[in-house]
Image (cartoon, rainbow, N blue to C red; front, side, top):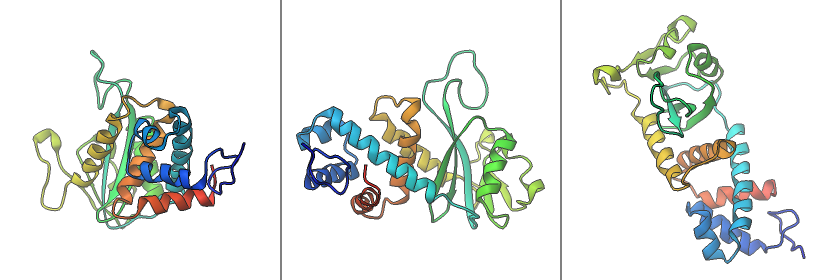
Length: 227
């Protein structure tokens, strides 16, 4: 028998019970913990959490930055399998590559990319960042040529020479986000490639709104677009 619920279409749980689930989710509890605390089956909890993550993913895409200016840190990171022996190069064979930008004092944006070649990265940079921005990167060759396409305020730190900061030039902010995201994902004991994008955007969302009431924001997202 379905119950009237403005957060879920054809719901079998009450609004109060769903708000309880949202509260646990906002606190970043695992599906098993939420199932135990709420008294709802793990399968049902997983279904609800996937729906919530889809709403968060949609929200992050709408909030995606455009024409960002100021001090911007750029970096790429690799998620997933361990390095495979005999495979060389940036990152590791079999990993999911994620490119990120972070505005100092502002938000982070992430995007899954097929590779870290200059054209791939430059296409995203031109679509998201103002030519007036001050860009900070490491020495990866994928960032070569930014000055040539109009980003004449491009500064680098050379990690290969153990240089991690040079006055205001560093990428400590975006590296802190990578550390945060990977630490969060460990608790899932492996995330499938099919759902990785949802977990990535959830980490982005939690990082960007860490000083705000996540429960209230998520509840509003789902109320405006029920599961």
